[in-house]
Amino acid sequence: MSSCAVIQNQKNEVLNTIVADPDFEIEGFYLIEYDSDIVFCQKGMFYNEKDNLFYDEEGFKHINGIEV
Image (tube, rainbow, N blue to C red; front, side, top):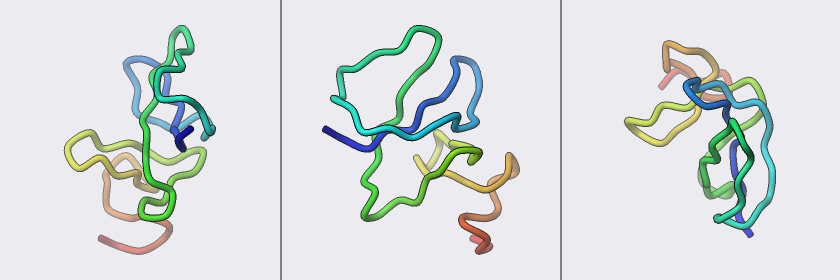
C-alpha cells in the first residue's frame, strides 16, 4: 500500500489523496504514488511531472506556502 494522489486524466490538480495498492485503477483518473514522509501532497495541489512534486499553484512556485 502506498500514498497516492488522485488526478483526473488530462489534468494536474490533485482531487484527493488515498492509500492504495500501486496497481489500483480508477476509470478517468491516474494515480501518482509518493512517499508521504518526504513529499507533501494534499487535495487542491498541482502535480509537476518534471520533478514529481506537488505545488500550491499551477505556476509551480510554492509548496505548502514556502517558495521553492
